[in-house]
Image 1: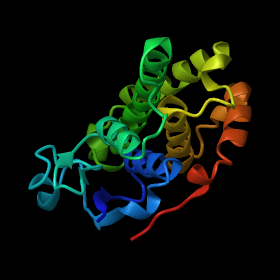
Image 2 (image 1 turned 180 degrees about the vertical axis):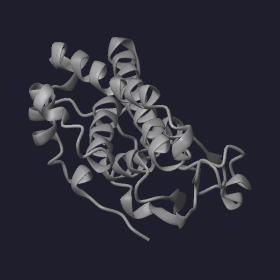
Image 3 (image 1 turned 30 degrees about the horizontal axis):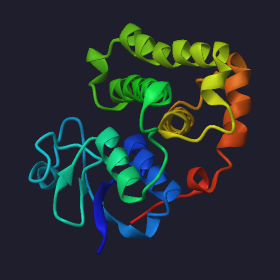
Image 4 (image 1 turned 180 degrees about the horizontal axis):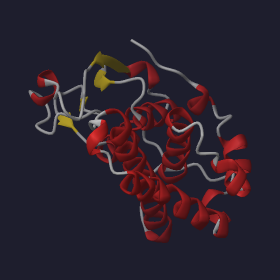
Length: 204
């Protein structure tokens, strides 16, 4: 039996789930389903499973429907008997908070992306876009001054989410040039992204 996930090759949240599955040795158990998730033209096929109409949406072996990426990744960690989510104590809260930081970078970056491609040009608000990308700036400042959060020997849902966020910045904002301003984060990412899960690609 296999799990099924509604897939978009450019969704950083789908990538986060697939990277997590890869880390847990579950890559071959996740079947990719086509989707057409869009912030304006919503995918009715996804809505039939997930009322939010968003990817990622996962259908488990038993037919349960899970969303969003945070829930899906924790489920995969349980299925794979993994350690990407520390079970308790300070380590758990630190990993979950770092996951929230990575997700927050992604939230801001996606809003900025939609401002570029989904909003009619006459209605675009440049200051709004700048403020959304500034979430990445302030987050990377925080990581630079707290290098323990991204130690190379640390592999958990927090560091994987941050790596997926940086992947998305590179994908959609090639002129953002974050490495020049955040060399410590850039150095970490250059090494951490060599992990097989982060080198993997997926397509239908």
